[in-house]
Amino acid sequence: MSTQKLPEVWLRGALDEMPALLQPVAHALLQAREELNELMIDFPEKLLWENLAGMASPGFHLQHLTGVLNRLFTYAKGEGLSETQLSYLAAEGKPGEYKITVIDLIKAFNSQVDDAINQLKATDEAILTDWRGVGRGQLPSTVIGLYTHSAEHTMRHLGQLLVTVKVLKQQQRSRL
Image (cartoon, rainbow, N blue to C red; front, top):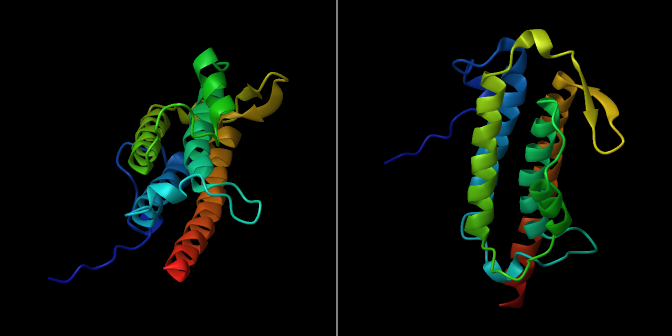
């Protein structure tokens, strides 16, 4: 049986129920999810928190991808961060006292992408240029600015994760 690779998400057509101006954001997030899930298949647990050449570990990137989406979409709703979100931010990059697995981190990211897609679908295009404050300093942005940055930031960290994972896997193979 032949498995034909699909074109990138943005080349598969418009997403149902997605506002036209938010299609690119949704496409980028869905593309990131597909690539992340494929990249992390069979990733060794023992390498999850490995730092490579001073770069962030795969575990950090996986936590950060989830956390940033959650935070940016919270700001887009015009809300501040909760104590739970601030605690999550402080814990990014740390394995913590409980064993966090690769699967746990992938599931958390997938769930956050689902939440983001649902929020995008529910967004009225008329509010996209509305002002939104970011962080404690309430730095200026807009709803569309936050959504666009979420897509850009996600793809940037996915690229960093991709390189880190591939190098760590290669190093592991070289040691065997």
